[in-house]
Each structure stands twice: as structure tokens, then as C-alpha cells.
Image (cartoon, rainbow, N blue to C red; front, side, top):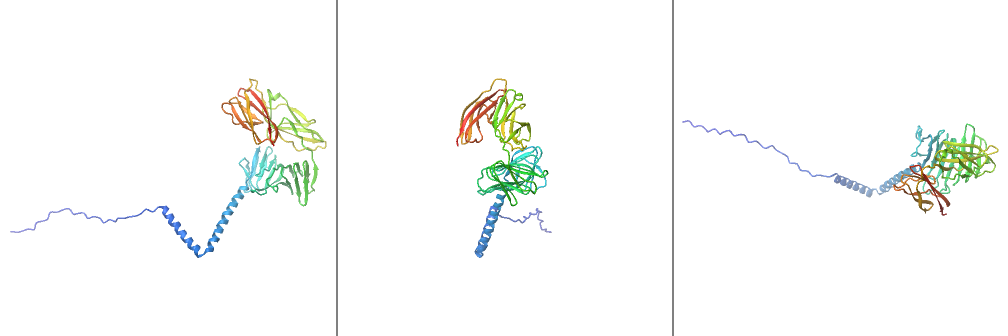
Length: 432
């Protein structure tokens, strides 16, 4: 008998487990890293300070100086951009000191030292500095901002140079009596005192250079020559010639129409408007000018050789106008222009009158508050200024500009949608 070893049945191989690695970690935030970094820096700085104390003081001084210098630079930048345009008419261009291009001026344009301003034949610009000094640049004029130094609690200094053309200059009551405002041309400089007004003309082509003082005081200097000016005196000189001081003809004082006065008429275009002014000694004739702009770049009417002190003008449409007068003597010398007055021509509606009532007035210092009622949708003018806010029910509240001490007549005129008009007058007294 043969014996066989039994064959073990086949079983599937048992799969072996693959070896694996287990990993563990701990989250660290950026904040923790930053804190550890600052801690290391603090330790390093502390160690350095203990080893070399003089390093800390030197470094702190340098940092402090750098911060102060940066602040000074920021202040200097701020104080060098104080001049701005407050009135623009026609074409006015500016060329910045760091530019080669001329650009049109607008009310956002600031002026720095070295900037050029040029006006065309129809252009004019009024420029105001932070100290209140104003330069009115007339048509066909080229000027340069020569100086613009401003500082808190320090004397200010502003100056412009006229290459060609004409400029009117007015100074305010400065906070510091040592402040200065000047205008120069050729090799001559005129420095004005506070509360002064002057007109300066530079015409190189015709060799005409003159400075006329309208009020206040001024000093004109060219090299060693000095000339003091008072009201209605003039300094003129040819190129290379001596300074010559003479008296000039004073301009007339305006009488009628009063400043900001309304003129109401049913037919304005055919209704004559009377203009009157006070006589000027030695004057033989006068010139009346009427314009729709404060700087008279758009002339509406001009009456030459008026022998008397009044005249009537016909043909004015409804709207706002400005007027002034110059005087002429027998030597054909012409005065500076008088003060400029504004008036408003209003068309009287032929339909029924509108409702306009003044409920009361109240003084706030030198400003008058006018409270009243009118018709919804009506338009109102108070002393030549439009009332911007009228309630839907017609009630209104208006604040005038600052008024001089004394008695004033406030004139309120209105017009409704039907063409009707109304007028009210209130007398007030501004205390001193």
C-alpha cells in the first residue's frame, strides 16, 4: 500500500499591509511669527544700547531731524500754493514753472513762484493770495509770480512781475505790519503798504511805464532812486530814464444807480436809464462804460465825451450790468476808473402783481437776515444777489453779505412764472 502525503488545499495569499508614516503638526499664525520677530529685534536693540549707549542718541537725533525736515517740506509745499484765481473772463492761460506747456486756467489752478499767467485780448483774471492781496490782470498782459511767501504768525511777502500789459493791485489790512506786496517791471519795483490800491502799466513797445496810486501809500524804487507815492500820484519813466513823479486826475464818485440797485421797467429796452456821478476838479469831460462782466471785457455801451455829470442810456435788456466812469482834463489826461457799481434791469410784468412780503429782519454782526414769503416757484433778488433757497410754500430766509456800519436800504425784487413782479424795501442800521 502506497501512502501519499495529503496535498494542502490552495488558499489565497494573505495581503501584506503597506508600511505607513503618521505626521503631526501644530499651526503657527502670522501674528505669532510677528511677535517672535519683534521680540528678537527688541532683544538685539536692547543689547546694542547696553553695549553702545551713544548709538541710540545719535540714531534718535537723525530720525527726529528727518521727520522735522519732512514736516517742513510739507509746510513749504502748502504755503507755496496759496495764490488762486477768483475771477476769470475770456482766454487766460498758465505755464507752470516746471512745465513747457501753456494750459487754460480754471478756478482749481493754484499758482506758485515762477508761474506765468497770460491773458488774451478778451481775457482778464483776478488772482488772490492767502494774505488777501489781489492782482487783477487785464487783457493782453503777461505776468510772472515773483514771490509768494506765507507763514503762520509771520510777515507775508507777495510779488508779481509785469512783462507787458496792465495790472491793478490791492492790499488788505495785514495781520503783520511787516508784510509786503510788490509789483515790478523793467528794473523798477513798487511796494505797497496795507489798505492800498494801485494801477501799473508796462508797454515796452511804446516805452511807456507808469504806476498810479489810487489810495494808501507806496514806495517806488529803481537802483538808488526812491519815490514815495500818496493818493492820486503817479510815477512814470522811460527805459533808462529818471523816475518822474506827477499828480493825476482823480476819478469821479458814482451817484446813480446805486450799487446793487434794481431798475424795474415794463419795457426796459426802450426805457432810458439815468447815470449820474459827482464832478471832478479840472475835468472837462467824462466817459461812461457799461459791461456785463466785472472786468469790462464785454462792453455793452460806452458814452464818450460826456460834458456834464449825468447821461441817459437806452437799449439795455433785462439782466445784470456793471458801470464805471473816467474823467478827462484839458490836457487830455485821463483819470483812473471810478469804483465799479452793479445794477439789475428787471422787466415789469404786464399781468397781475406777485405776492411778496417781508416778515422780519435780524442782524448777525454785520450780516442782515431777511425772512419773508412769496409765491411758490418765484425768483427773488436781494440787493442784486439771487436768493438760492425758497421753500415749496414760498417762505424764504436770506443772509446778505457783510455790510459797512451805518444805515442801509435792503431792496428785494421778485418775479413769478406769470411775468408779474414785486418790490419791497427795508431800512436797517448796522452797528459800529
